[in-house]
Image (cartoon, rainbow, N blue to C red; front, top):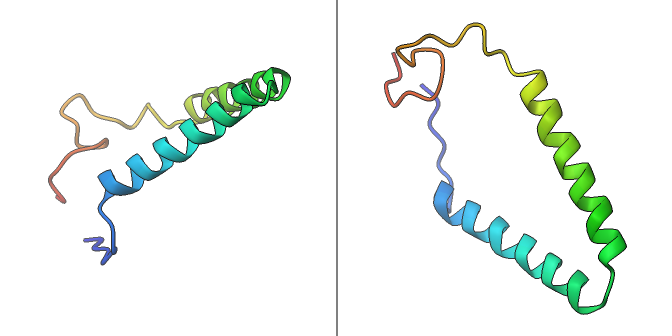
Length: 73
C-alpha cells in the first residue's frame, strides 16, 4: 500500500499546474510568440503520443484490476 503524506492534494496540484500552463500560454500569446507556442504544442503532442505508444495496455483487465481502480487489492 503506497501512502503519501503530501501537503497538497492531487486536485490542488493539478489545478496549480493547469493555472501555471494557462499563465504561460497567455504570456506567449500576449507577447506575440506564437511560433514558440506552436513548438511547445508540438512537443507536448509528441510526448503524449509517446506515452500512449509505450503504455502497457495488454495487461489491463476488463474489470479494471490492472488499471486505475480504487481498491488496493
